[in-house]
Structures are given as structure tokens and as C-alpha cells.
Image: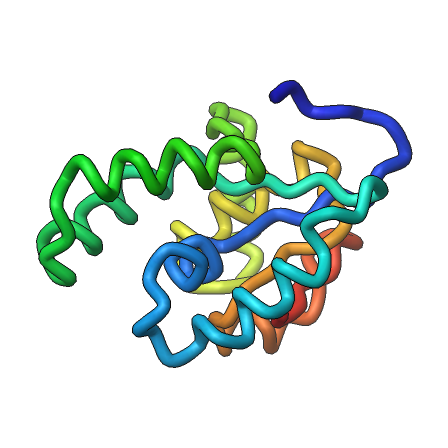
Length: 146
């Protein structure tokens, strides 16, 4: 599914939102799933997540939650049909490094993902991360909880 660079509202999911959608035993899952089900069929929205999360999601679900690898891969395939994986580029690193040295956040991984979401021209970064939510925005992109 290619990114539609139209006037659609682009929403980038943090890893914790993706995990909420795939693992309903998580504390924040109910709110994330309810939000997504309410929004997912709206044609004016496009949803993305960092393809970098795939290995993290796979590890957490197979190693920590003990879900079989084939079920996790099937779930990732299904997720990727509705939420487009977006790949990191070196420019994301450059912006993340600049933001890091400017003291925006000490979490470099979060800054990489925020930079990627900004490059994807996302309007909203959806997360349950309390530290990210304190920022409220990243270079004009809103940071919100479901």
C-alpha cells in the first residue's frame, strides 16, 4: 500500500500502539483498540508505523509473551495491510541527532521514530509513552494518546 501524499490526515503509530493492537492483554490495549476501530475506516486517514518496530514486536510477542512465530508473522502481515510500515532513512538519524543535542529528549530511539514520522508528513504521532506525550508536539506534528 503506497503512501497517498494527498491531503489525508496521516497518523503514525508508536511501537506501543502497534503492540496494543496485537496483544490485548496489555493494560493500554483496550483504549488503543477502541480508538483504532473507531478511526480505521475513515477514508481521510492514513496510518503508518516504523518498519523498525517489526523486530521489536516479533521479539516481545515470541520471547516475552510466548506467542508462536507463525502467529506473530501472520499478525504483522495483517497489521501491515492496514497500517503501512515506513522505513527509516539516514535523514531521520540526522534530525534525531540534532534534536538530541538540542535537549529535546534523551531517548534517541524515540527521536529517530519521530523524525521518520515527520518525514512521512504525518500530522499526529499516536503513543502511550508518557515522556513523549509531555512533548505535545515535534516540529509541528502533534503527539497524542488514543
